[in-house]
Image (cartoon, rainbow, N blue to C red; front, side, top):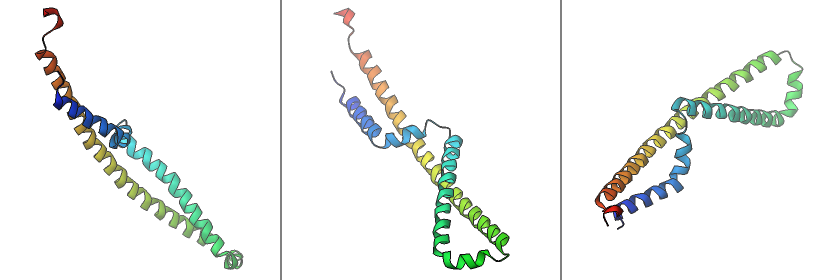
Length: 139
């Protein structure tokens, strides 16, 4: 005989695995610190690329006045200014990334806890069902 509650829970678990589980299960393969560090390294690379693209756009926009400016002796001051802006840009992105990925990990952990609790319920129901069924030996 089929246990309707067990089937309902298994359907719920299968639905979770196809939706949120696709996102949460890979996250939970990492420790919190490893996941956040890995994502922050990816954010560092992408934010550096974004800063480079923004810098190139600025250079193209200021191309006419930049040629006159580069002949001056203020080049080291401009380089320092650009490096400071780069450092601030990266720091802001890293702080945002830390909070975003910490929150994602926390959500995935809570979601996976519920999933495992449901899994344990299904296992208990299955064990209970097996105990209540008469064994084949007695027939």
